[in-house]
Image 1 (cartoon, rainbow, N blue to C red):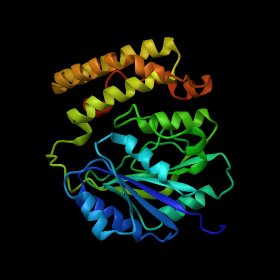
Image 2: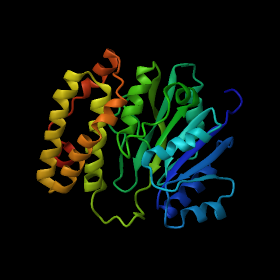
Image 3: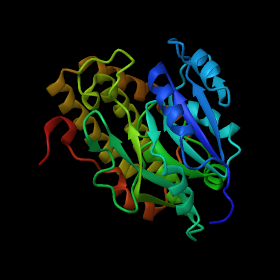
Image 4: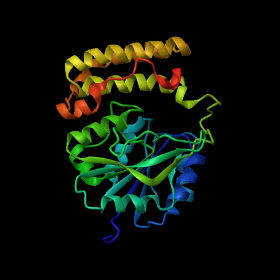
Length: 302
């Protein structure tokens, strides 16, 4: 492998001081040493900023005045000097050889490679969040992936209209639309450290929370509206609304259902203003935005 290129580690944080401490410790224990580390803090109120400044002085801390969601990563992308950028959540950390493995993947000769998605192991539920991903995944899990600076320069950053969730799906589609490749690394992995639950989360399954339901609803609606031809958008947006309604009935998420529906309708003009239809082949690869009527996170496997 050629001389080690600089890798920027871009971490987004919000009120998870203890998890972030673990993440930063693991990052600095990496076998790969030519790194710069950026923490973008989404206006945490738990002492996160003081902890980073006092315990990790080598970290570049970007302090935001309010929580802007996943768009906070864009502030890290703007400041990044690395040839590659590893994106992490405050509660996810790479294993010791992960960065080295990611750089090696970029140096294997595929000049079109834009994103290396790592395997994501959830240590709370003891399963891989990337289970079922193909070698050419439709998306990556945002708490652990390495993005080429070339992609960031040509494709742009994450879509700031997404507050949380599905931004990886949108970004992956845009990468494929710009003729970049995405691969799932066969061995390198990132640990999704959900065991501490520092935001006061109870024992409720976070994959079935009202919060997740609300923002999944919003984000996938944006994905459908902005990326597909009108006929597909119309058909599958109705199906998506039915999907959300069925979950709402099962889980009693009426408040979240109406909040999300009203927000989509209220922001429709802004959402459509950023509409950029994917190439036909890419629309087909994403099955034109089709989704199952029954969400298997709530209704179980077939």
